[in-house]
Length: 459
Ligand code: ARG
Image (cartoon, rainbow, N blue to C red; front, side, top):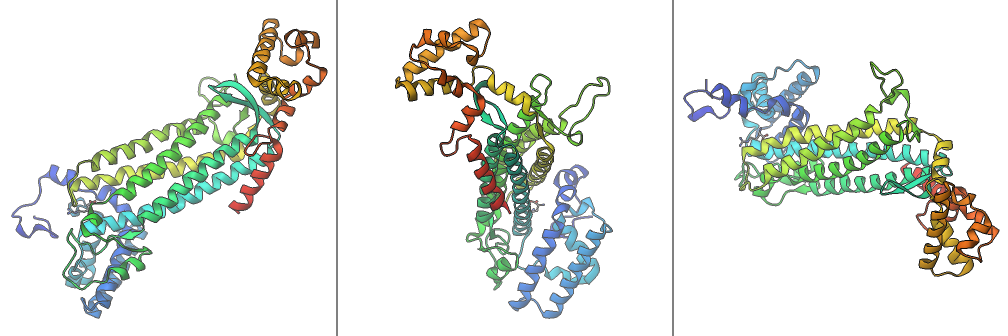
């Protein structure tokens, strides 16, 4: 049998494989709520513009609501021969209301319909990702406040660099998430133009009111060019790009958690709720959730790359290639949502091991910069010379296998005779972090203030 929706000029139905490659119902059925919303806005406008008689509008509206109920109740039967969600809804509508259903598609095409549905889905998803990112920010800011004074090693090149506070480290991720949220909102703002009414590609000769449908669906305005309306998938690309950057941030934190929970580091403890055991090694507590957050960045970045390649070189306007926008976009944005939720759970339960962190913060000559700064401040040495003197002292301490604070004053004075007892005060990690009061620095007083500010702003 040829297709009921477009089969007028076809004598026979599609080959089995044609049907399989062509059908999108397996994955676009998730657009059912958006599709029905779009159709309700469209048919109401057709009525208001006098394009459809009121009784047809009423019948179609009632029918669409029944279809929605059936889908929500799980009684709707999706059939592959109906290709996609748009034709599935319309076909069932026809069964319910009869021939009037055929009038719904006046002044519309699946091309503007699918672009509208996808925008509605992506918009809702961006809104919920923004909320989830805010939840993670809140969990991090609260951890930061609790641990504003907990010292830990700060790293560059993953080598001990200077002591920092655990709270400061948490707040670094709060900042990254703030930029992520800014990108979600930017993408949302640019997305918010309605393609409905662009029809197949050229617009329509019916006197439709595109401003009415745009505003009924919560868009700021209709899209201005009908070709662009149906050929554009920037909104999906931008959202995937924003999601990819966010996923990269989460993967960096996840990697830190994996390293920090190892027996060798033992910096933090994840709760039982976010670790798993090994079936053979009873001592193991594996950070699986963190590992999976680290890994899921792969599929999210993959979806962005995949869709960029699908879109590259596509001539205007719509091509069926664009049906390939869906699975990757759904999967990636859903994966990010799961990552944000898992990260929030891990952060809430996270227990830094303060004693280990403090010990590690002092090892590796992490206060060498404090010593050099003291030489500059107290003795007036140029920084380069202070750096050199400090280097000699680090060498001496390392040759003896001791920390800088364990060198005697006499040993210190071999490198610089004017050094006094007062130098020992800056060699402690607490003093080191407390002195970093420059704006954005790691001092506990800064961290407390920033964490409190975030908690207030996040509400
Ligand atoms: N399922 C299609 C998609 O997702 C809907 C648009 C089909 N348009 C067409 N001209 N065949 O892209």
